[in-house]
Image (tube, rainbow, N blue to C red):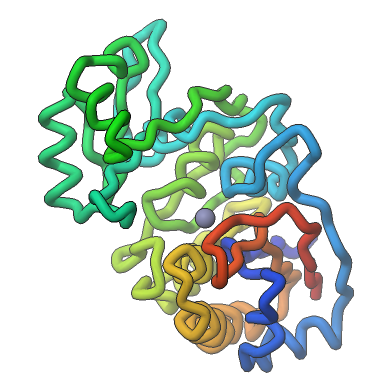
Length: 277
Ligand SMILES: [Zn+2]
């Protein structure tokens, strides 16, 4: 019997600012020393750098066209899509360009007939997206509407188990046909419960052909341009997630879906380092 692989996806972990090098990650270092390290291109030339590209690529499916974040979020948050329509992801921003709070985003959602999902995020129905109110907010820079894009095909089945918070990773995985496990305390940010994710992954190994654990904190910290917080998030991953997973002794792979620079807050398309042990 072949041992089940656990794949850990550190969202946005690499960057040109040396965060991975500066973080103290003794478990990852030991995995790299005992296993193999390769560079993998997870952002094909025709696609943007982002989780909606890199996660499907890591799971074995290269999208033919840019993936619509609206489809991903609708799947992640269980929002029904009307037949023939396309869900559009939109972000609510304050006058100064920073992300709105959940309460502010909820108020905008009810004003424009959108669904509030989490934090500053909304889902618009494409057919209703150009309402007077949403157009006005968009023109003032308060509402940023993402491109429609394509959805993902069901190329996986429930033998692939993805442990993640409700968010892009869970949405991609659900569209691809994988089984989703959202542990209590999984927030998709630096305050997530990494030990709960480790337990969920170890529980999921039985009956699975592959277990994938997504960690969103490094990406979120980098978007906030907080490098110290990004480094602390990486060190917590090493201690609280990689350590118990490495203790299992089975195949363990650590990868990233793209880089996110904590100086610019932007994703990057450089190939990522993949450690296999
Ligand atoms: Zn990101």
